[in-house]
Image (cartoon, rainbow, N blue to C red; front, side, top):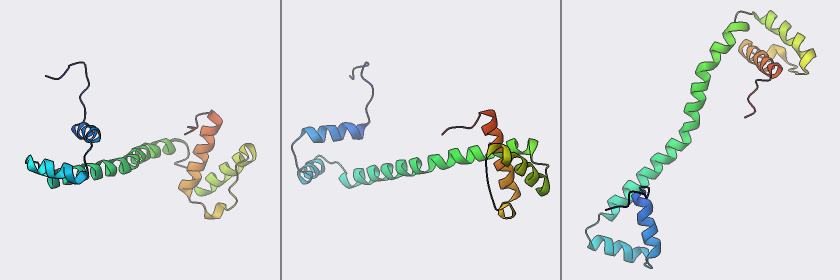
Amino acid sequence: MADPKKPLRDPIAALLDFAVEVEQSPDEAEQELRAMGVDVDGFLARARERRASQAEEDRTTWLRTAREGLKKEPQKSSSKYGSMGRSQLIAEYQRRQQQAQAFFHKLDEISDDDLRTLLMDLDDLEDGQEDPT
């Protein structure tokens, strides 16, 4: 019976720890496992599949987090700048540009949504709410 005070270990990690302790070549270990009736190829395939699945999960976690953040963002913009037209957005930006020393010199190339985002960022900076990360 397992000691209840010890945390459960990942079986693969336990197998690898055991394999390190035994001075045996990979070929010898494979032969011994096959002699014991272990499906070595199946085990390796499952281990590779698990590793690939975890790598894919790690790769896409940041993407899900970013998408969740984007779903919240439009609600923030609609309150103050959402109803402003392009000329009002540009006028507000030019007024703020003098105060905040923020410059975007090609206003004719920036979209209305980008102007709104820029103004919201300036609001956050003025309020001290900008996330440093």
